[in-house]
Image (cartoon, rainbow, N blue to C red):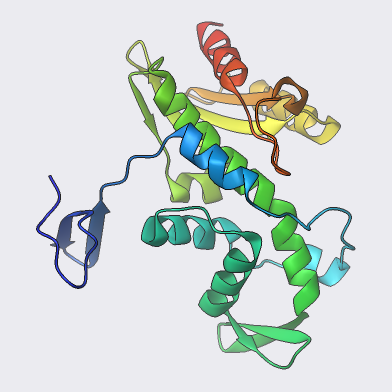
Length: 233
């Protein structure tokens, strides 16, 4: 149960743990797909057909996913695109002028055109929301014994979520059906013989999702059923 509420807490804090050089904050939050879809339908999205800046596209920028999930953790809701952009910039960049921002790493600063970085972030924005919604969708389905997400595994290993089914834990990567995604899936499965972990790459078609009227398309219960069929295979 949550700890007693105080002026610095909204009543969702379950525990704060210190151990060695780490500190863990545990909060309680009940997410529903209906609640997420209501938020999504109210979101504006302006990331379509924005130009790509080669210097920004090949740059190793701080991960967008980190700011996305930190925002959700502390705000208990989805960020709109402007909120995510502002939070991302405040966490990782110094504003040089109206048009430029600078990322500092290893005592070296790299300056980028702000609009180019924003365009790259906005191209990732729908996928970030889609992946989180799918996590809640899987959890809500009650088809799996356990559903979990790790930011570390997502960023370093490309694992969007873990599901436990019939006592077996599967690492699942979710991708939209495209030529690039199909090639990645073929390469991933080709390594299965030497990879002891149960890794699955799911290619999903957004045309099967019609229940959300917002600008950002989401996955649906049909996609959860496809995942379940893949686990059986």
